[in-house]
Image (cartoon, rainbow, N blue to C red; front, side, top):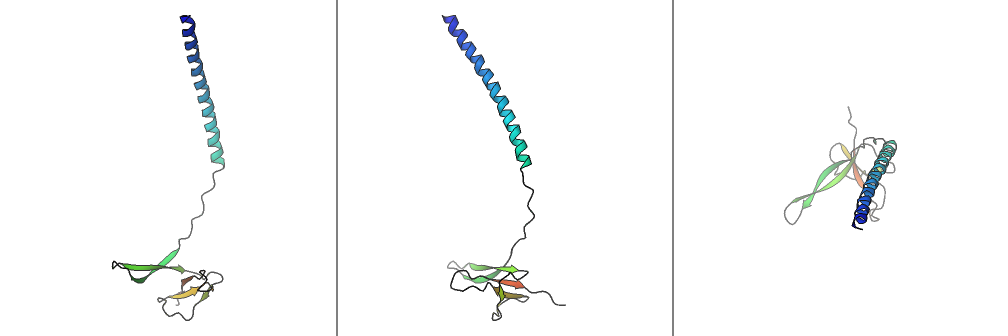
Length: 120
């Protein structure tokens, strides 16, 4: 009886070994298939995005005495629907204030600087 139990143990060990090699083969075939799919569906590199330009403006001093700044967006061309603020006199030389024509009290109001074209 001891011989039978040893044979059973030895046989079962061999079977598990054959199962692991079979599972390795299937895992290898799955990974090669996955690689082929990922290379065919990989999107092309997107075009480079334009970087947004900002100008820093001093906005005061905090309680610790550190200078605070506000970032103001600078545009090269006026966006659609925006208009020039003719009453503003605080724009730096070579720039104009523009806004998006929304109410100042609605929370949708935005303003920015528009870089003027150089005159020759």
